Image (cartoon, rainbow, N blue to C red):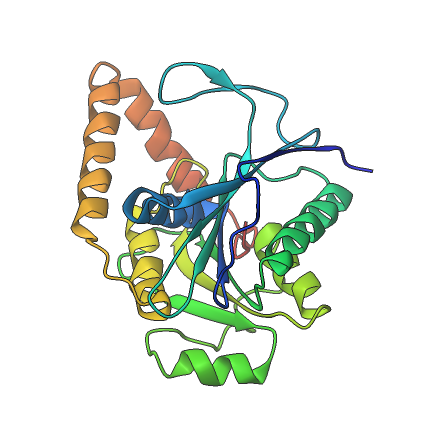
Length: 266
């Protein structure tokens, strides 16, 4: 059985109005993590739970203050005009199938206690080449969910011929929640499936859809700035090593030539 260390940041659970959970943990292109981290930076939500696990990666990270911390996954909440929002973000996901199931059940326990009846998970749809105009696809747990989200536009629900499975929390949260009567949708943005790629542009496409769903206005130019800053940092780090650029280009070429199907979610 997976061991979790739960830190609570409240004395009494808040009373929320039909909260909707949005998950954005590390995965393909870090698309989901970039999107939800941006929501957290923008909305300034309140921390509820901080979760550590023996099945997270065996390391510690430097925080923004330069201090060491264990990997953690956090649940936040933000009061909305018509509906409240729960955000699931963090450094890691469990690294074994059993732990992934137990982790997803734990998260559902927490959000169900808060009255959550709908979950949106985010992810990247890995492709073997860079994507200039990424599409957003939707995978749902019921036809009623399609009716709701199809009205918003911008989400393609013809996904069954592109992938066979959604791996990790972005899939298990929906599957296990469905058993409890909680509806859900996965929003998946096309992204380059290379391990060094960070999908800022793809995360932006997810945020365009999310702001329509949760009724908030986001200054997505800030995300464009983050993307440009990251590109500059990458260029500066490679300025002194032309060989490293050559190696990266070689890796990209090898990846594109690889016949292994990379169309999966993580």
